[in-house]
Amino acid sequence: MRYISTRGQAPELSFEEAMLTGLASDGGLYVPESIPTLSPGEISDLAGQSYEEVAFRVMKPFIGDTFTDAEFKDIIAKAYATFGHEARAPLVQLGPNHFLLELFHGPTLAFKDFAMQLIGQLFQAALSRSGKRVTIVGATSGDTGSAAIEAFKGLANVDVFILFPDGRVSDVQRRQMTTPPEANVHALAVEGDFDDCQAALKDMFADIAFRDGVKLAAVNSINWARVLAQVVYYFTAAVSLGGPLRPVSFTVPTGNFGDIFAGYVAKRMGLPIEKLVIATNQNDILHRTMVTGAYTKEGVTPSISPSMDIQVSSNFERALFDVYDRDGAAVAQLMDELKAGSFTVSQGAIGRLRDLFASGRASEDDTRATIRDVYAGSGEVLCPHSAVGVKVATENLGQTPMVTLATAHPAKFPDAVFAATGIRPALPERMGDLFERDERFTRVPNDLAALKALVKERIS
Image 1 (cartoon, rainbow, N blue to C red):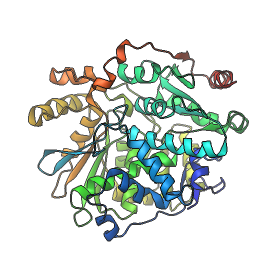
Image 2: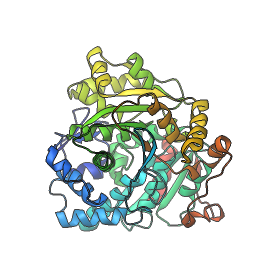
Image 3: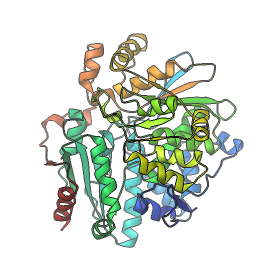
């Protein structure tokens, strides 16, 4: 299995090389040269298997000979050993033909744990046998950062720097990033929004001398291994509901497009997905693009679902690459236009996107009302991001079972949940002392030179 860049100018890499590199040297994102498929029989055989076994069978075709079967199974077992539910990603029924896929039973209570715990073990295995050391820099709108820190803290071959927008994440999200005491963890509060953090990350990778000098690696969803890990729970959910003999639809609350792109990959692999529905909050650039064909940045308005407060959805580039017939030059041109604030998707490409994805949005009032109504109707407590998904899903219900991805535990956003329901969800017992732990982080300006200097200083 070889990996190519969405912008067409970077060298082809193996799975291990693409994983450790993250962002391609031409600024693009790595994708598989081809998508392997599973037959209906192979999908049927996933029924009744453990999450770990499904993960092995779904992901193995993508990793080539990077790890032996025994090594890869051991990596998967270690990745999910700390999850708080034996099913790892259990389904809960919300109403007729509507199901919630609970993705918050990992160590940091968010769906990012499915990918980050795995990628932590993948990095550890690869670096241990090579003896190399890397510097991981990640940008987060809330959940990726804590998941990355949890996965990499204390590892001997890794320094991890997480950039988060100062004052624009929840208190629980911030404390999950700032309270780990391990010396290889560096939480950086950036004066700006998530897009500023993400832009700084991409600029660091674009500086070849800096990237090579500090051995830079990425674990944001720009890293293909992150997307690959998320493909698995589409299979476990669909098979639980009768797949492949029965089609299933999914609604995905998304800002950076990575989680729903994983659903698209699952569909390309042969999973019978009828609808893939993009759910956005008031920062609805993805929904507006689907409606108008124009991807136009309008600034970020802080919301009660902060992990979706994004205007530059990095993984959308991977979808564009496919609907532009894998024309790297065309994608590079669009990304150049985006630097000026917008681009327009061609008529043929937007038609293909609309064939692949539906979309919708939820206002702040919609989100609060959904949290309230779902709690009243089913007793299920939703985080604001999951509520965005449920609201949009209800507009797309039909005869096919609909699965909405519940991306975070409601206790990560207690103020929003309390305002909607009058109850304040408690953190799990293992995190009960989170607000008593000492915080350790550095406030930094939104300045690339200052950020690079700090990284160099900390790893020296």
